[in-house]
Amino acid sequence: MLKPLNLALRFLLEICLLIAFGYWGFSTQSETLPKILLGIGAPLIAAIVWGVLLAPASNRRLSDPLRLLAEIVIFAIGALALAAAGQPTLALIFAVVALVNMILLRVWNQ
Image 1: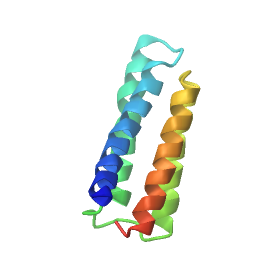
Image 2: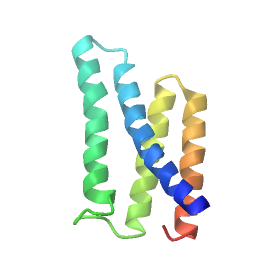
Image 3: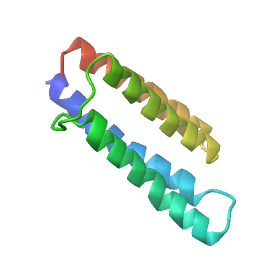
C-alpha cells in the first residue's frame, strides 16, 4: 500500500520541482522580460534535463550512482530556488520530503 503512494509522491515532487523553478524565475528582481524568460525557461530546462537523463523511459537515462547524484543535485537546486525566492520554510520541507522519498525509492527498489 505504501509503495504506490511513494511513487505518487515522487510524481508530485517532480511537478513541485518545476513549480519551484517557475516561482523562482517569476520572483526575481529583474525587469518583466527576464522574469518571463526565467519563469518559463528554468522549469523548461529542468524538464528537459529530467526527461533526457532521469526519466525511466529515456534511452539516455543515467545509471546509478550517477542518476542518484543527478536527482540529489536537481532537487537541491529546486530547494535552493525556493529559498532564494523568499520561501525558506517551504524549501526545507521540499528538501526533506524529497530526501525521504529518494531513500524509500532505493530501499523498496522502485
